Length: 108
Image (cartoon, rainbow, N blue to C red; front, side, top):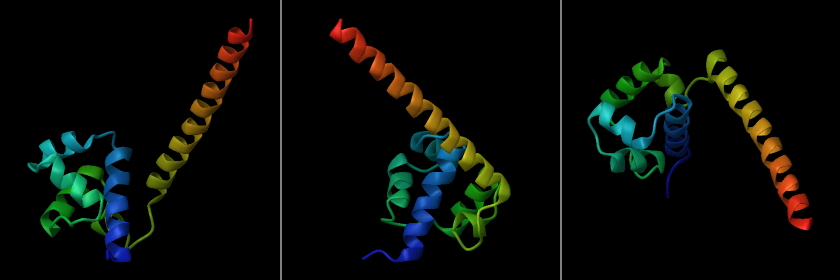
């Protein structure tokens, strides 16, 4: 059974990687690990050692405390998350409009 803290860290590792526009393979290459290791960390099947956490926090411009969920996400992080959510809503709206248009075309 995986503990709550490990799940929080795993979720944050994936979140901050995605917020910074990196694939698992790109991150792995940048830090000298395999993408399988990064995937494992993001699934809470293992945790990176502290030197990797320090390296990742520097890459992402955040503190280790924020990365591991010990402190709340920064204002900048929350703003990025809001922007992503807003873009998701706009993309979903556009997708629905396109699907509706396609259905109307199909009926003709």
